Image (tube, rainbow, N blue to C red; front, side):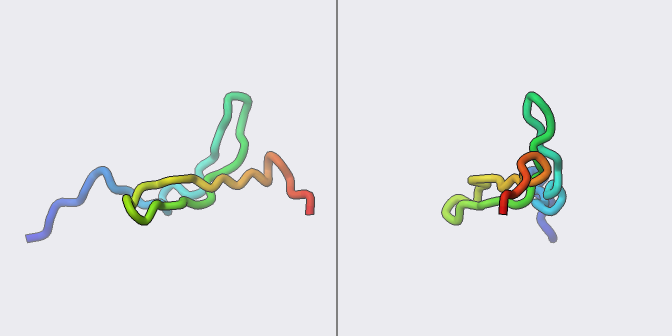
Amino acid sequence: MQAPPDIHLGSSEAVTGYHIHAKDGEIGHLEDFIITDQAWKVGYLEVDTRNWWPRCW
Protein backbone atom coordinates (compact mmCIF):
# COMPACT_ATOMS: atom_id res chain seq x y z
CA MET A 1 0.00 0.00 0.00
CA GLN A 2 1.35 3.43 -0.97
CA ALA A 3 1.31 6.33 1.51
CA PRO A 4 -0.97 9.26 0.58
CA PRO A 5 0.81 12.30 -0.84
CA ASP A 6 1.78 15.04 1.61
CA ILE A 7 -0.40 18.02 0.66
CA HIS A 8 2.10 20.39 2.30
CA LEU A 9 4.85 19.48 -0.15
CA GLY A 10 5.08 21.23 -3.46
CA SER A 11 7.48 21.43 -6.34
CA SER A 12 9.93 24.32 -6.39
CA GLU A 13 9.71 24.12 -10.17
CA ALA A 14 6.01 25.00 -9.94
CA VAL A 15 6.74 28.44 -8.43
CA THR A 16 10.13 29.25 -10.01
CA GLY A 17 9.58 32.24 -12.28
CA TYR A 18 6.75 33.75 -10.21
CA HIS A 19 6.82 37.54 -10.28
CA ILE A 20 7.85 39.24 -7.03
CA HIS A 21 6.11 42.50 -6.17
CA ALA A 22 6.94 45.19 -3.61
CA LYS A 23 4.51 47.86 -2.44
CA ASP A 24 5.50 50.06 -5.38
CA GLY A 25 5.50 47.44 -8.14
CA GLU A 26 7.29 44.43 -9.54
CA ILE A 27 10.96 44.00 -8.61
CA GLY A 28 11.82 40.70 -10.30
CA HIS A 29 11.02 37.02 -10.44
CA LEU A 30 11.79 33.98 -8.31
CA GLU A 31 14.94 32.39 -9.69
CA ASP A 32 16.01 29.76 -7.17
CA PHE A 33 15.87 28.49 -3.59
CA ILE A 34 18.56 27.96 -0.97
CA ILE A 35 17.60 25.02 1.22
CA THR A 36 19.09 24.39 4.67
CA ASP A 37 20.60 20.93 4.62
CA GLN A 38 20.01 20.26 8.34
CA ALA A 39 16.29 21.05 8.46
CA TRP A 40 15.40 20.77 4.74
CA LYS A 41 13.63 24.13 4.87
CA VAL A 42 13.76 27.05 2.47
CA GLY A 43 16.30 29.39 4.04
CA TYR A 44 16.48 31.99 1.27
CA LEU A 45 14.91 32.86 -2.05
CA GLU A 46 16.98 34.07 -4.99
CA VAL A 47 15.17 36.86 -6.82
CA ASP A 48 16.36 37.95 -10.26
CA THR A 49 16.04 41.75 -10.33
CA ARG A 50 17.63 42.46 -13.70
CA ASN A 51 14.36 43.85 -15.15
CA TRP A 52 14.11 46.27 -12.20
CA TRP A 53 17.81 46.98 -11.62
CA PRO A 54 19.84 46.36 -14.80
CA ARG A 55 23.33 44.90 -14.53
CA CYS A 56 26.16 47.40 -14.83
CA TRP A 57 28.77 45.06 -16.29
